[in-house]
Image (cartoon, rainbow, N blue to C red; front, side, top):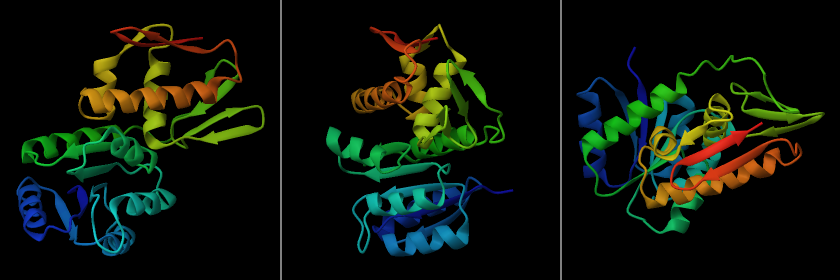
Length: 224
C-alpha cells in the first residue's frame, strides 16, 4: 500500500515539483496551497506523514501543526522553511513538529527524512507499560504516569524517552539520537534536543532515584 503524504506549500511550482518527485517514488500525495485546505485535507485524506511550509496564507504552518496535534499525537510532522533562527526551530518543535528541513533542499534529503520518520512511526503502538523507577511509561499512548498523575508526552518526547530507557544506565549516543529523531546532528537540532532533555528531566523529578546525566561530547545517560 502506498504511503500517503500531505504537503502544505503555497509556492505552487515547488509544490508540484515535490508532488511529482514523491509520486515517481511510489508515494501518494495531496498538495494543499494554504493552511485551511491542509487541515481539511488532513481529515479526509488520512495521511501517514505531513510536510508543512511555515509561511502560508490563511493559517501558517505553526497553526496547522497545532490543530493536527489536537487530532493526532502520533503522525510525523516535518516543516519546510527558509527560517533558520534558533527560536524559529524551537517554536516549531513546541508546536508539534518532528523535524525541520531548511530551504533550499534536495529531493533526496526530503525522501530520506520522510522514510526515516515513517520507520519510526511503525513502532508497535500497543507496547505494554514499562516500569521506570516509580514511574510507568507507555509508548503507544505517549503517557508517563506516577501514582495517579499522568503526563501526555509529545511525539518527539516519547521517542527520546523510549531510546533513553532502552539504553538505561548506558550512554545514549548524541549523534545517533539526533539523526534518528531530527534527521541530522547540526547545531540547531542539538540545541532543540537539549530543550527536550530539560523537559524530560522535569517530568522525572518526582522520583529522585532517576537522573539524566550529560556525558560531555558523547551523549546522555539515564541512570535508574
